[in-house]
Image (cartoon, rainbow, N blue to C red; front, side):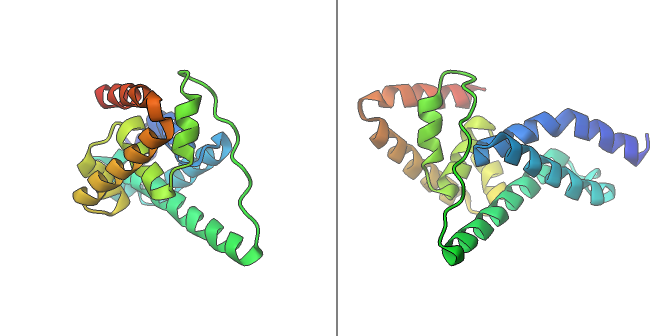
Length: 172
């Protein structure tokens, strides 16, 4: 099998999952697709090396997350210097009736949001999240704990619903 065909199969098999990850990180379908496309283009450029990795999808996720973080830093700098905030994200599609939870996750700081999305939506282990975000496992644990505490405080009496949502994410 040629490298070109191998990459085409990788692309076809992973594109939707990468778009979904981009969407969960940004809250915007178009931005999520753009992140996925950029990540796959960057992986394509290095496919001769990436294809030999044990887990090329992990590498591709890391490229996507790093690109998201880079764009986030850039937008914060632009907003600071231009005195204007980034445009509001589009409303997500209600796939499973959890718009309230999604809105609360969107209000988390970017680092906490990335950890929660990677842990519970993408169902990655703490070790995988740490590797993707370039932080220690302990930092992932404490960031997750702070994020969940913040969500629980926001939900108040509805924290049982939050626990059910996160438990469902852990079982996926």
